[in-house]
View (cartoon, helix red, strand yellow):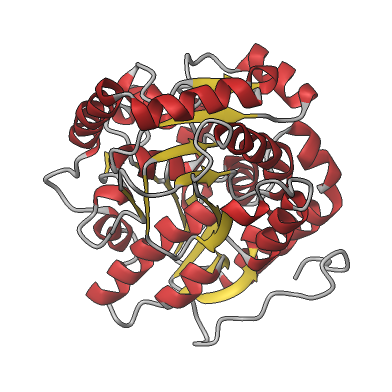
Length: 391
């Protein structure tokens, strides 16, 4: 087993004495998507032995949770540097556990910064099937190679056994790489998924600052300030701000203390609640796609570390940062990034979402286009894909 001094402990061995699948999901959204995959796979094969480095949703789905990786969810060059020691220790512990317990398959879910490095190490050390070992390396929810670092698709093809993608155009992206790539449908359109949000023309404003601590620290103040500006026009407006964990709730409460004029108008609620909203002010994360699919008019606000932003401007080659906008190739949610995300501009957009009937209708029409783009394939879904490799 690897040196785990930085972590303070080692991962537990499989409780069942063996393991068929290890799932690695490093973000809250990936944890949720992976949990639905595991739950469906276990429904088809009750004897399947699943361990996970993920979060509470994977544990609830029936996986043995070795470590809650969602607490280490970081984004951006600067944030990774700040957490380097812990991430390196975690990386070594995961690789060591796989080498010791030899699962039939490892399923990497999104989180490419760590996951692709783990896959490469397993290939380099002869653990993976492609390098002569017995463990299949599977990837669910592809890195966005179509947005930046496109050459990664060729290195992925050398080390992975199969890739399950959630956007239909991604199959074409990997054409010619000899990596078996399958569109398994978007999890938000699966039969067992209920959108956590809905459009309610008399509901509150929904504030979505994200699920990472660093991002929330930068984005939440912009959202709260924009809502404060909205109250100047409509003094009776209410807002709901969503959090993904108790730790993030505490962080949001500390930020909200700096906005005493709106604190009583903003309710903090867990992301387990179902919420109706008349408009959304959101970061570019997974929940923004949920809102788009639910016909909720909105606007994207995003702010990251200045150095990370400069690097992204050089490396990233897409027109939009919001996934709904990217898929539609048009601004369903107008985007305000870095210094452009001022309280007055964001507030003006939110008021337009509330009052402009044409915008509300356009949102509904574009959301219908989005659902059609992401509809599930006629072949099997992600659980069927997984089970093919652990027979």
